[in-house]
Length: 379
Image (cartoon, rainbow, N blue to C red; front, side, top):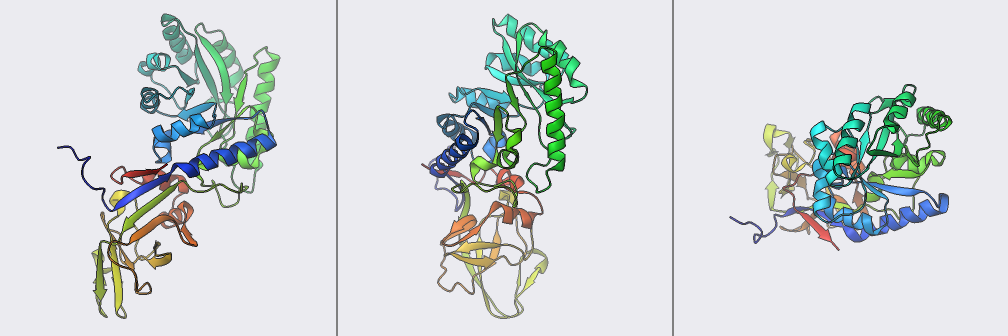
């Protein structure tokens, strides 16, 4: 049975593409003022941080980004099949079975060992191509990549591999968005030392990048040729202490409606486990969104915005519902709009605030809103 004709459920994620375009303009202006030759990589992994990879990729392409960065082959093929022609940088590690598709779909692959480079080059030769690749350097995060002090001979061997061209080299900051930049600068020093070592051996790699959003904001000395902008393009700063760019605004809002209003008498309890007991007559609104949609599973913590005012959450969060106290919002009515995350009037519930309730980070909050919440795009 087709469901496309059904009305949307009264809980949804709203993506404002006009704000996204504005953010790209602001980032591009800031970039041009600080480093005119600097180019942008738009990181759109995990369905563009929950914003929808295809519509966001189209806007990123219009904004002139040099690459779109992804992690899974499936993400990359989805964009190619949607007509996205912007160069795609496929980060992470690739199984051998994935490499022919990297060639077929004209992907720029991150490669960290000689054997993978040889396999990729062989598939490229069969296809009559040269496969571009970037090499990842572990400068201290100890996740993916060649260790900085052991990388040079491996890169020299990779550079002799037929069928490939080393287009770029990258590393990744472990902590670029905090006030203390000591370790970030140590990573930068290691990365630069390797680049100098490679240049002495005759290997001059044209595209160098180490900065994520935090590095772009706070570490101009590390900009090199490209910066990878992920969270920032969606209007969320990576920390509370990093540099602010005026004009950046959140692209995503999460909204719902009041489905039911429940009057409470003294002694009435709310929700599983009876985590809230009314000490005076109260008015409770039931909102049809819950931890099954990605709302943090908290108890008596957090709030929503109704008619521009905060309504505190009472009781525990259910899979499909939360309950909030609207006693102090007497004009609130059934099916009124509720802002779960976003702005309503002069108040705003940010991704950082939701992350505090969840005891996590804003990245986690954005990608955790599940697909059963319909995405509604404002053009």
